[in-house]
Length: 166
Image (tube, rainbow, N blue to C red; front, side):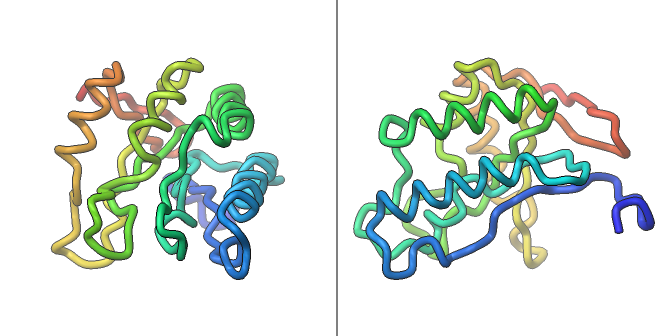
């Protein structure tokens, strides 16, 4: 399909809630992150790794947050593979199913870890499913990215990575 339709860019993301069904948090999150890591080796071209932390959005746990220290080895492996493959990590403007203070994913702690291992290619997506959600949390995200040290957003256009200063 990619060769036939030639989209401007291709997004790689793991969208499954199966990890959290009837599993304790640690087991579910490790399984999810392992699936994300495996998805980086898919046999087709993609540009962006998106929705990192997706299962956090729907998790039934009292504390749904991903903590870098708890899954450091998996996150570092994911981040290094993204960098090694020349891919872009997406920051998604919608991280929660309700307004519970989580305004984007991956969270700031994970974005800082990505930056600290050398990640610089970052994109923004509002995850807008309706017109009122276009640019959702963009200003908050840009402020966080600047605070971490990011200087630009990367936008893939037909195989070319265009950098836009933030």
